[in-house]
Length: 79
Image (cartoon, rainbow, N blue to C red; front, side, top):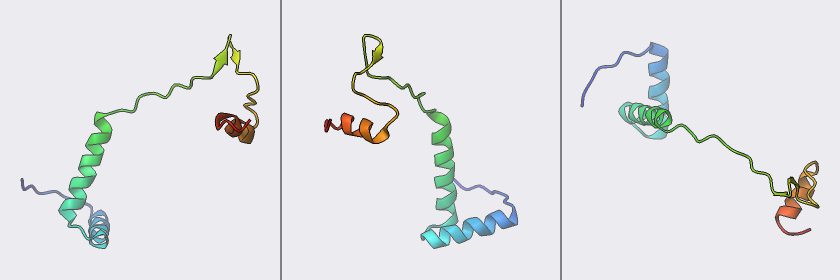
């Protein structure tokens, strides 16, 4: 489908230079940008939920959350 878009002169030049540098046409650059924008708006990320490893309501014995290196060693089974 063909359409006409109006861009700010500086934005147009910058987009055109980027498209040329990437070996694309301006049309390909605009299509890719619109697709990313629409995809991002369609699928909001699920909220992250942190689940702690617990035993009887307490942190797992032997896990020191204040020592990052020790925590990694414990998670990898080296402790």
